[in-house]
Length: 84
Image 1 (cartoon, rainbow, N blue to C red):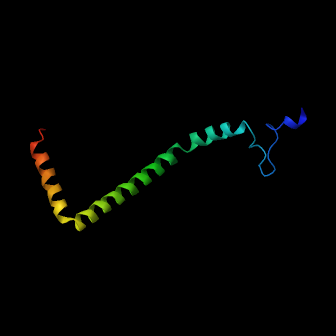
Image 2: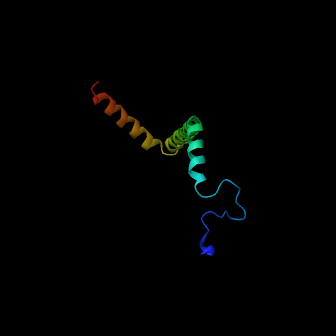
Image 3: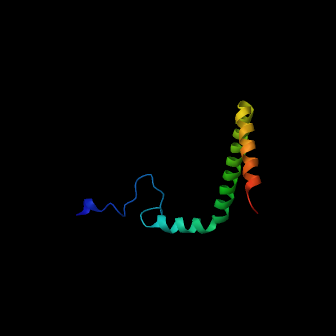
């Protein structure tokens, strides 16, 4: 049936060479080449997250000073009872 042959026929807007089967090969190729870039991006996102988290903690401590003081005292107590 000629009208069922759609697997190898690219869509009108598709670039040549990006049809079915070639996606996996290009994916693997880019995966190997960008491992260090992915790691660098992950580190950047993690650093940004940690900065935002620290900023949120500082804001919470300014807004709720009593709760911040209690949290500091609890932390000090935990550190005193911790055995090295």
